[in-house]
Image (spheres, rainbow, N blue to C red):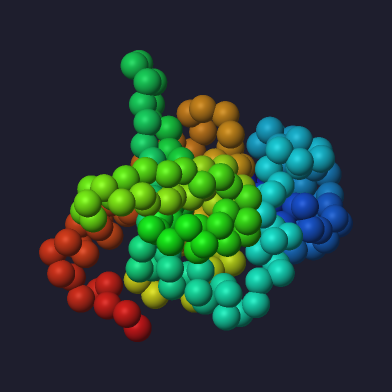
Length: 209
């Protein structure tokens, strides 16, 4: 009997298909190789997968546990894990997970820039007599997802935001065409907003564990 594909199965295809063969994916999902190949084609994922391959995976894999912990701690304290929402006239919302880090210390930003493969932007800190402030921003979906998966075990304050952003990235990668999975994305965005609402009102569900 034909089985409908579930959201978590699509997520697994997106996250593991570059690492596993069709035969291995078939065993993992209890499906046939033909079914795996058909689903990958149906989702619009190219055979090579190069478009969705993270550019930062190799650099992140080189980090020690201490460096991963430092990166997570910095994002917990002075970074942000966000979901950007955009809507053009007459169209439904489009969502983009992203990560931002900023500092007045250029040497720290240089390290982040090297590891995360992104450029540094410079601005002025209005809260500190317009002194220079440096920022790195990650908007490429595959890279954002790879970073969050790497630091997820080390996050404390923003772990739930990271989990939501990872799910959003999986949806974007699995269904890049407009209109697909819009209901699931809307729900993830509402979950993300509720976290910030609860935190602003001092909900103790977000204390460090």
